[in-house]
Image (tube, rainbow, N blue to C red):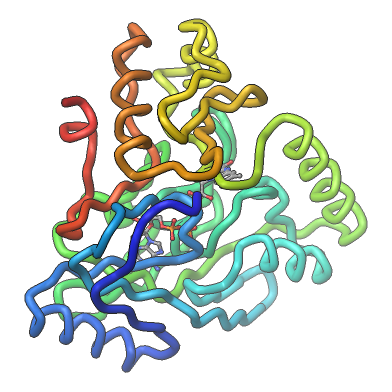
Length: 280
Ligand SMILES: Cc1cc2nc3c(=O)[nH]c(=O)nc-3n(C[C@H](O)[C@H](O)[C@H](O)COP(=O)(O)OP(=O)(O)OC[C@H]3O[C@@H](n4cnc5c(N)ncnc54)[C@H](O)[C@@H]3O)c2cc1C
């Protein structure tokens, strides 16, 4: 979204050793560890965020039949295309920016009735509370835009996922990816946004509720509710973190139904500002 300041500490994670070291360093420095994938669903506070921000860069992929073992730093769109060339079909996840780790963390996918990342996940290797653990699909407790990792205290570091991906002729998968990408371009903005701001309420998409409240195109400082898709907040140029918080607050006041925030907002102290703070 191009909002936010600097991290007090920053690390690029390329190996399992780096994961362990970043976790140890955050403990030593007494600062929160914030794990970052592509940053496409994340907004940081302005100024200095007092945390160690660790970006996962490792993105190796191994294909064994219909089993795909992929490191968390793999770009999801690139993975889709590479698998399509091999006749493996992840096309349902077309158009979702970011990395595999971020997609597992937030169970990325379509709306409440759609296909989500968990459809494909068999297991996930995570560094949590100083130990390596493998979570089965059931252990991951996936739900609509949710997983056990999102609820954990401390910062679990998703390192690798094992996926089972259905086979389909490469040409068909590639045609679907192109079709779905075209549809996205027509219906959603894709620049200076962090994607959907709010979760659906039951089966009703949040954009419909925001649209009904006549907020399409509404501005809150440097933030504008997209005219194309009312659940996308756009940075019109000079938006601040406070503008994002204000937009969230005012939209939630204007919409009668209770809206839960989907994007991740990080305050200057490195904590996630969830619904409680946004509701003030
Ligand atoms: C134009 C646009 C369209 C979008 N469309 C969709 C959509 O259709 N469906 C959808 O679900 N989302 C969508 N999104 C939101 C976003 O792309 C997804 O949520 C994506 O999966 C986030 O991945 P990321 O790597 O960018 O995560 P980040 O933004 O980097 O991180 C998101 C959260 O995941 C955590 N995290 C990331 N990587 C790891 C890791 N390895 N270990 C532990 N925690 C981690 C972070 O700490 C953070 O809390 C869209 C966003 C944009 C900008």
